Image (cartoon, rainbow, N blue to C red):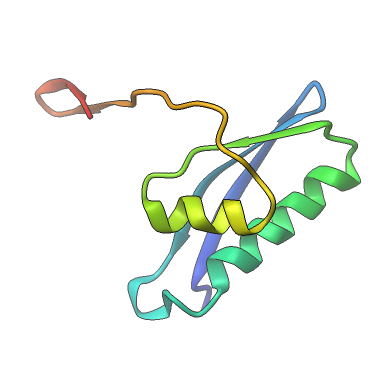
Length: 88
């Protein structure tokens, strides 16, 4: 059964890595790092010049940092729920 998933979106030689998720019982085993590496290879194969991502926790940020990325900025995130828009 799959334990990790992630999405790669590519447009105009810019890749975005999104929705990286690992099941709770499979965390801290390197699967998230493996899937991010796999997605990065996919981006390279099609000629992406830049890769973006967002990290929702310090542990996610450390994964990207361990792969050679550096932080260049932060942004706010808005989500919708049944009651309307919620700011994080």
